[in-house]
Length: 131
Image (cartoon, rainbow, N blue to C red):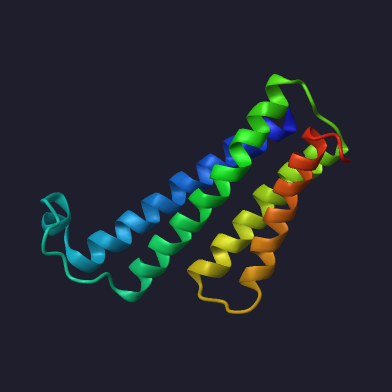
């Protein structure tokens, strides 16, 4: 398996972990029975649960851009220093981003997000033959 595909697998694993944490935060905040029901009258999510909802959404959005590019690179057998570095930047920055988001660290978090976007753009540019 290529490094790029490994980073995609790990990034998907990260999403699963974040969803599990978000689910536990929801159960802790609202209770199991309200969440197991139709969820029509749920109270607003508590602070940590809201943060986890946002980090999951943010990671899902990042994966939505990253995954197709990695899959296209794999199908077309394009793998070079740019695609490898881009995939690594994406994954590791997303881990850092998630941790900063979970712990509520301001200002630095957008820098980690930017590094992940740069990694995604590196793969895109490599696929387009620009780099």
